Length: 150
Image (cartoon, rainbow, N blue to C red; front, side, top):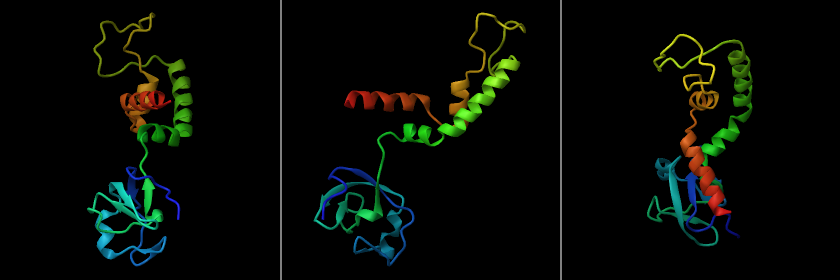
């Protein structure tokens, strides 16, 4: 049987595994339940089972028990919420086009709108990122890692 995961690959043990069911011919024992949802690294493969660092190679893990952990979870999340974010962004464009809106946390020198685009206006990208739980700095680091790997 060919390997889906290479040795050294970070994987997550699936959360939907059922005890006493076979996955790639390997029984998921009740004693394996504490590992559900945890991340591990593949340290060995014997042709039919994977062995993980998380249990010191004690259990045999079937391919279908595991899922690969992404190196870019923030960018993956951004893709996942892209349609919702675009819709929210369109609403914000409409709203901000009609009204002058400022960030509450910043002290204003004047109650008049600063025509040169001062930094106290709402930043749509940051607002959407905060709403959807996206760390923009982390996303940028992931982008840089992708570019370096090309």
